[in-house]
Length: 297
Image 1 (tube, rainbow, N blue to C red):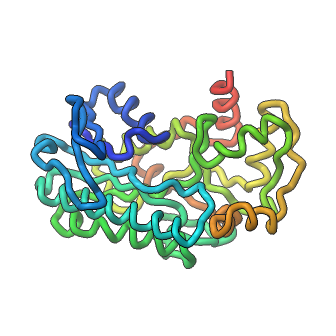
Image 2: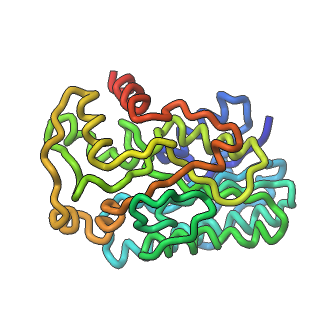
């Protein structure tokens, strides 16, 4: 078993990951942005580039999930926060990993936004980056791990798709509307949404921590699903209609720059995960809906 430190441990993904890693028998430490008071805490200040390095002695893997939430309206000020929060955290932890020695691995959060809006083009980890604000942000985010990879540390970049859960994630804001029968396709509805259940998201992150996998890794179900099909399937599963299409102008008014990425189409293929032997629990849309309905109950 390993000793694994997790940043962003209080968030939706981080808290589920900490619980899973402990279930697997790993020793888990949580990075906290104040003085550490619990035995499982490590103090750090990513804005200042500071971390209690001595407390990291004995850590085998650092999982970095820190960054301002994507799912808010993108003002110019918030765009800056999205970028700087990720760069500060990643640079701090990449430097710490390099200082701790080449045997320490860094599993760094990333996003499907790396690929930009690509229609139905199959996107594997070898696909080139796209264009646009989020694609450029993700490229800078990934590049911020360079100090660790150049020092010889194993770095895995978890290019996560849309995390689906009743408790939050990509569809979190939509779930109350879906339950009320007031939701429907967003924009055209035919854009491909690369989704992954929260359960498989944390299982995949644990898999990356436990296996010698380097470089970018797509975290998304192998299923190719459109936005309209995903919303309709979830609505059907909870016994609600989903016919009220949300027009593109309304999305742009509500979400600002974020609407561009909500309307993007990304056919993300999890080639590295599948080739490494990872088995999805929610591999198909039917699997996802069955799991979500069970969560509802």
